[in-house]
Picture 1 (tube, rainbow, N blue to C red):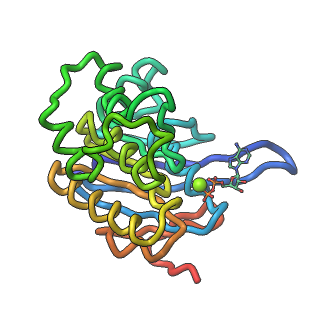
Picture 2: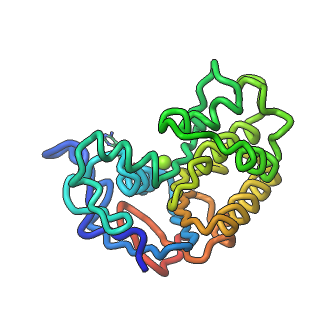
Length: 226
Ligand code: ADP
Ligand code: MG
């Protein structure tokens, strides 16, 4: 079953001579449980694509269906609630709130959704991600790798069915990057989640079930970008 599909999804920034075709009309289908990596060079349209898939940005045209629902047909309020309940997003630059501890950052989506916090699950997440002993620290006192793990924990805490990650290893050294990828892969498998990750690093694609390529806003299946 497709958990996500796009039809004729495209994005143009600006108009006239200044227009940028950041994403050409795109048809993507992703099955529940799949781990898909989208690889492409800088400026190829990766962030544009991911933000559209996650409903963080509006397309110039076309649709995104998640769990059979057209996300751009929803009101802003409904989309916000839908995203919080179904979608986890890991930003490239973490987006942790500096005045909240690691743990407070992680459980924030649960508080916003007025959910009871399942501390057993949160403990397990922090354990899997190797940041349990850092839970009381402020983001400023954490390494880049630890902040990224916290951002991943925050994305996973609502047990979303689909997770989008924008270059989650972009700021990490090779060792931390491989660790984060392993942790991602394991937790996603364990909780039967779907993961769509973008990267400019072709090395990372070995972790995926399927690799898509993007170049000049065009998404393709098999092309190796040299
Ligand atoms: P990537 O994430 O692969 O580096 P982006 O999706 O950020 O690529 O950008 C794709 C193209 O769209 C680039 O040419 C970029 O300059 C352009 N672009 C991105 N965001 C905007 C914007 N808000 N306004 C105008 N052009 C943009
Ligand atoms: Mg980007």
